Length: 340
Image (cartoon, rainbow, N blue to C red; front, side, top):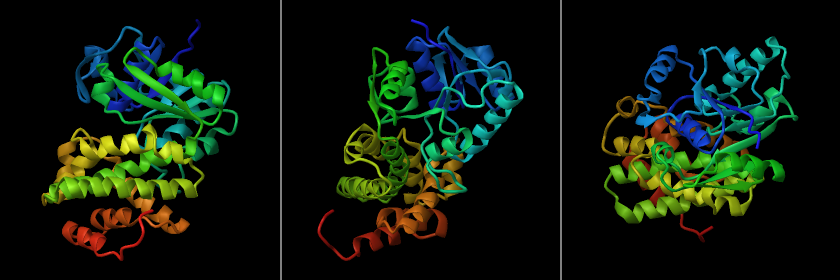
C-alpha cells in the first residue's frame, strides 16, 4: 500500500515519540526541529538524547535537512507538536514557505498533538488551523492518556484520533496504529481538544493538593470535580458527553492528575511544597502547558459564563500570587449544592 510521507514539526518528547510511533507503524517520517544544535545532535546519535534519552530512531525516520521549514514545504501531510504558544506562528511560517515554494497552499491533512489554546485569541487550535489554511485541509488531533517515553518504547497505549470527517478519522487513525498502540477514531474534534487542554489545569490542581499533603480523598475529589468542569465547558462549546467520558477526557485527566511523569502535576507538586513557580519550571526543563492554559481557560470560561471553580483557584495561585492553602480553603468553603 502506498503510504505518503509525513513531516512531524516539533522535536520535544511528545513530537519525537509520535514520530517514532508513526515510523514503527510503517510511515516514512521526517522530524523537524527549530533548533540547529538539537537537529545536529539528533542526526549524530540517531536519537533525541535531550528529551527521550536512550531510544533509537527507526530506519524509516529521517531528519529535516535544516531548521528552515522550506526543506519540508512540499509535504502533503503534517503533524504539529509544538507548544501552544508557537502553534499559530509555526502554521503561518509553513503557509508562507509553501507559497514561496509554488506548492498548494493547503496540505492534504494537518494533524496536531498539541494540547491548549491560542494564547492571543483564546481559540481552540483547530480554529487557528482553519484560519491559516482554510476549509480544504483535513484537520485532526491525536490525543489521549499517554506519556511520551512509554509510547516511544512501545508500552501498551490507547489514543484517540479526532477528526470531523468520519472516513478521514479512520484513515488517519490507521497511521498511528501499531501492535502496542490502539487508536480510536472520533469525530468530536471540539470535545477532544477541550479534554486535552483542561486536564492540564486539573493536573496542576491535583499536584498542589498532593504537595500540600491533603491525601487521596482530596485528589479523587479534584479529579471528579475537574471532570465536571471539563464537561461543562465542553458542552458549552459543542462537545459530546461520550468524548468527555472516554480516553480524550476522563482517561487523559486521570493519567495526568495521578502520575509524576506529568509535567503539569509536577508543577503543582512543587508549588504545594512551597517552591516558586520559576524554580519548578526550571527544574522540569520542558514546556509546562498547564501554566499558560490556566490563564486562557480562566478567561474563556468567564466570557462564556461557565462555572469552573477549580480553574479559578489554580488561576489565582499561578497568576495572582494566591497562597495554595487559601485557594483550597476557598474551594471547600463554597456553598454546597447538588452534584452536577
